[in-house]
Image (cartoon, rainbow, N blue to C red; front, side):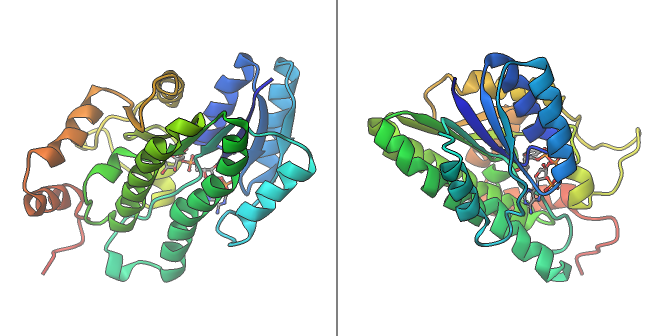
Length: 265
Ligand SMILES: NC(=O)c1ccc[n+]([C@@H]2O[C@H](COP(=O)([O-])OP(=O)(O)OC[C@H]3O[C@@H](n4cnc5c(N)ncnc54)[C@H](OP(=O)(O)O)[C@@H]3O)[C@@H](O)[C@H]2O)c1
């Protein structure tokens, strides 16, 4: 049976990937920091499906964590056929006022751990001439986003990196793809520190996580370096950067994201 390793599997999109891959017969390796959430998901999936589920709790902002994860899967002789680099978070607000340790952790998780895990798991996949790496990007990666600047830049990295590796690895039988959702119903907004929206707010509609993951698994069957998922509006949003001058785009997006308390003066 194929085996998938999912980072950030304790909640949201990562947990939903686990729930949707289990009935397809994938054995699973689940990782995140919250051991109890991972264990309870693993128990549920083992009970309902004839699959093996391993749990490896790790904080992927620790610089050695990607190597520990690779080593632990090797030690347990767990061949990884599908790596889903999903763990990530955002940080909303004025960059200059941001918490330095949170900003560094964001770069370590969204960029460095993702690239390091890709590097380590890609090599055995290339030797076997088979395997898939899904890197979870975002529609935020298609344009600069003032007040979500570092997060958007981290997802621009994921997009560029994945598309480049898609082309590099086609001849080696390994698929690398960026999956780019738009706003999706998970813990993401809470962790990022977005203000709670009320029903009268003009915040964009949230896509359902089940639909987003189902669409992502469909997209995985196609041979592309990236896929925008989560509804038609996301395709329009990601097309705008081709139409508008870059400065105009940054200003327009900045007006949408400017916190109520920031005057910009
Ligand atoms: N929801 C959206 O609107 C949206 C849109 C586009 C892209 N995305 C992307 O989708 C991915 C998943 O996010 P989500 O929406 O599912 O949010 P979520 O519910 O907050 O899930 C984030 C996952 O990442 C894990 N994680 C966070 N910090 C970690 C760390 N230091 N080490 C290891 N794991 C860590 C969390 O587990 P622990 O806390 O247990 O460690 C959790 O499992 C992210 O890359 C996000 O950027 C989300």
